[in-house]
Image 1 (cartoon, rainbow, N blue to C red):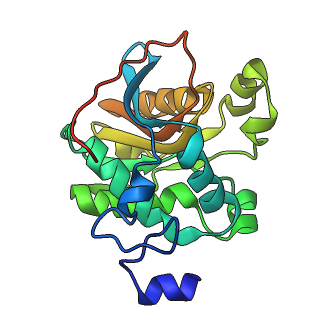
Image 2 (cartoon, rainbow, N blue to C red):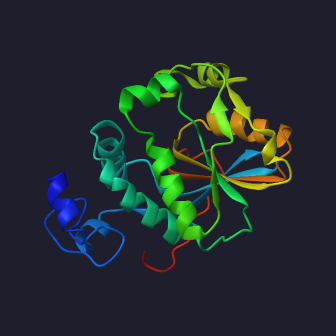
Length: 219
């Protein structure tokens, strides 16, 4: 199937049956996606925005992309994120992605968020940077509770001093507690980043958070 998709780039990357003109998905598969405009405050001066809740078809696509080696799905997520974030169009200097540990990256063979980040930077015409790396190995966050997540990522990141004075768009795939994004945002700001804005593909739906939803044009 991967070979078929490579030779037929207009074939829907979800159902693999219908033809599509944009975003890698056919009309029927796009209609399965619950598209929202969400915002969550990570720090007092750092917002995280997201186009989807983690559930339904988006959850299915993310699982396939991250855990079933369907790496070609980066095209879908890049197009969906671009359609969403272009409305904000802040004057970011570069995109930085939440880094993987070397052990995890080697096991998977690729870094899913990094692939999307590089392609998104190309479409937004801003730099992509690997200025953030893991300073130590950490446990997988999805196995931990909220308090354990905070402790797990505490002082876990290193940022290159070259981020000083730059406006950063920090990208990740899924936000649950926000502990990872909070820790890395703080690290970037301490390293001298001028501003940090966070973008994730999907967020867990947490009613106590300050989400806002806007119904606008079809994606």
